[in-house]
Amino acid sequence: MPLEVKKQPRETSQSLLRRFQKSIQESGILVRARKIRFKGKKKSRDMEKEAALRREELKREYEKLKKLGKLGSSRK
Image (cartoon, rainbow, N blue to C red; front, side, top):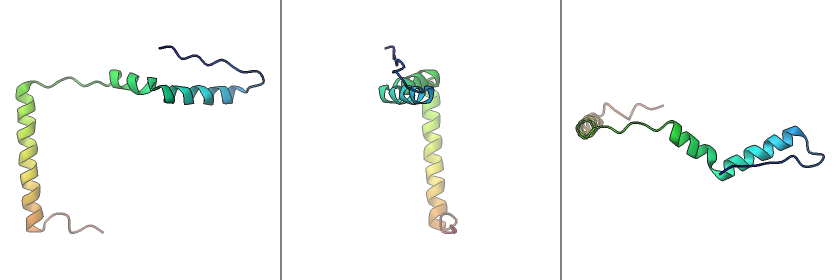
């Protein structure tokens, strides 16, 4: 989907650039390009399970520390 912005009569280059940037943001082209560019690799099934187990372990440890009062109450 090409996006075309033409310079209007008596329009400055800065206002043309501003109009172009606004139309790019509204069209969502930049968001799609970033999603494609920074797409991460899928993890294997075993790696997903391992990560889930690790998250659960960390969650349990966090709750344990919170109950003991060693976490969260020392904020200033």
